[in-house]
Image (cartoon, rainbow, N blue to C red; front, side, top):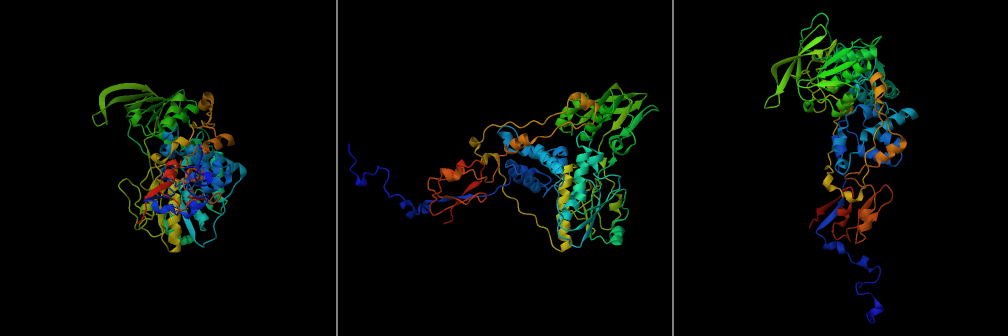
Length: 548
């Protein structure tokens, strides 16, 4: 059969090559695609406000210095945070619904450790002529000092203790945060021109500000006061508090003598830390007594698991009534219908040479309470506004001193937030944070394009060394594994230039703008079919109604 159509063209083709550009088919559509940047759930979850996706993008490209520079725009302590942070960002990671979450903290730690080895520094901003007093050299105070220095202000940190670091040093054992890592990241902040005054207690904030000409003050005193409970003890019973035990590991001439059998009363992370410390100090038995169940225990599950591996025992639904002659009288508890523990009247004996109380900590707010205009909440925290400023002009508070979760990450975030508001206060303006973008939820993603890639496992110190030394328990990633882990990021809600939209558009309406510049739509030809949005792996394209 012969083809007698003009020019012997195939049936489906009715136009000359190139003439489709003369037909503005975009007029047919009722909806159109729009490129939008969405908020990744990891970014939204991070208490320190890190742009996690941005620094992972640089890391997966192998540009580790650019990744670190992006990271320290928000967090000056990445090597510490990669170890001490409880990485709630990973619980929000969309990849967890595909296989396993990206191990964000391990990549952050890799970048922080690399920066220490390479000696990377951060320069202070142009001098503003303003001076700020920071009270407390813990995570919040150090973060505020760092960000204030980047903004060009002179900073003086007054620290009542003999060393900087706050609860990162005196509350987190060295097997979790090695002290050389802590010292290196503190020194980088001091190298920016920040002045650190150790063993310096501020007794009168307004007087100190006036005497030395400080233009503003950020108070970030940590929760170093241990909560106590009245437990009758005989002459042979030794009762200590967890904060003092952990602190003595840093400032004492010798390690505390805890005896052969150590009982820890409490269920938080500090209780777990001090029990694991007791094992390393030679205790044959270390037992945690907690009045509720393991499921109700506030300590993080992975820390509890590590403690159990190291030989720490846990007794649930128990309260301690008294201690005498190497024995503790313990009452069994039972949960009521509301899930609260209630005494049963049943008792048992538990052997113990030392009882360590780990029942929480409070902040010494005495110095703040004396300042005119400062209000104290019922829980003894300081009342502050959205800008973290108290009722006394120029006095800001953060970290453990204000109502919030008491973690290193939250404290670092408070320091950054306070620094930005203090900067605005000193310049006579108001700091307005950027508006929140829509969150990139999992259902936006086209996961067909992502292959399974299990999470990289960090190496763990062998059990015998964990029980007998304070060597770091968790090892870091090397460059190969860190690169692999960074590349597991799905880039949720933000274009990473995969070219899918460019390739699938039936109208050639997607225009490439060049590397790093993404794409744009030519709406003269886009018919609004939505194929680009459906095939976008990361969900960076929205279909919106066309305006008539």
